[in-house]
Image 1 (spheres, rainbow, N blue to C red):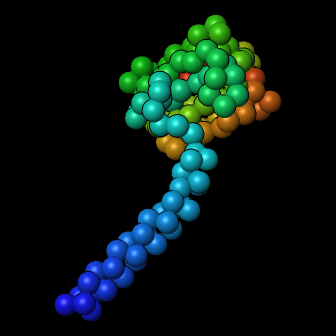
Image 2: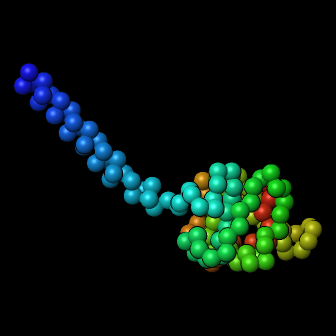
Length: 126
Ligand SMILES: [Ca+2]
């Protein structure tokens, strides 16, 4: 009887250790961008500020090619992708463009100093 109780206690402690290990693993998840808010599954969301702040707008592959709203034109500070897509910077419409392939799961907390400072449109494919 007593050993059974001890066995259960050990099992309980083991469970706590497992939870503690999960808790330790959590920071990697916590460092990833938030999934909630305006970023829904299947969307690519853009923000004017770094760290997903400022004006935001979400695009869905079903929307097809879309010019980004004025607030985000050449002004994407961060993004989060829950879909595949393509960021486009027009050099000369319609025949010269610079593109960046975006994959489901991609994100950048700071993007304005990179291609975010050039984005004109989002499309399903480059
Ligand atoms: Ca541009």
